[in-house]
Amino acid sequence: MKIVNNDSNIYSRMKKTILYLAVTFLAVFGLVTLFLTTSIILDLFGIRAMEGNYVPFIIWANFISSMLYLISAYGFVQRKRWTFKLLGSSAIILIVAYAGLFWYMNAGGLYEVKTVGAIAFRIGFTLLFTAVAFFTISKRCEKIETAIIM
Image 1 (tube, rainbow, N blue to C red):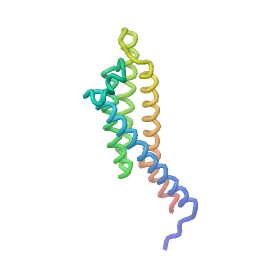
Image 2: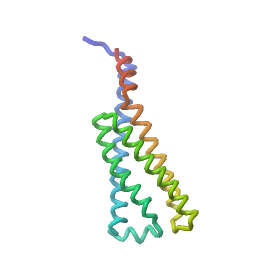
Image 3: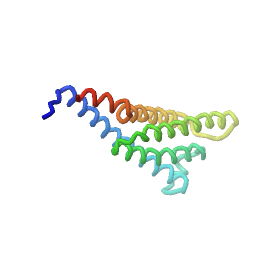
Image 4: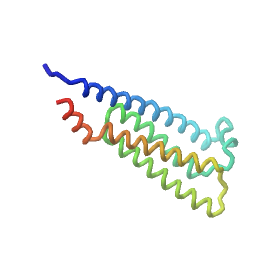
């Protein structure tokens, strides 16, 4: 019979709670993003008109990220280490698109001011969940968790 102290039980429960919250937020954010970007790309529900001067490559970067968010939510549930890499890739795509947005703005392209803040928020969100994936799923944390339980 293996006796596990309460500290490791608390740590394990806290880690599971963070994992489930991450999955929920990531899946909901991915679904909302997928709906909105698809609606803009396909001009559904009049959302394209509501967006005003949208920037096409930003919409496509968000669309790709929405797919990566949904796949990453699955990776969180399955505790797959590639979740970190997938979210990191999404962050890189968004950062490149953000840099491209500033180039586009300086070149005189039409855009909405809210786009600048929205993509900055999305980058922060993605980096946060990349860190959560790293610290809840990574091999290093599995070793630490095993050492705590033993």
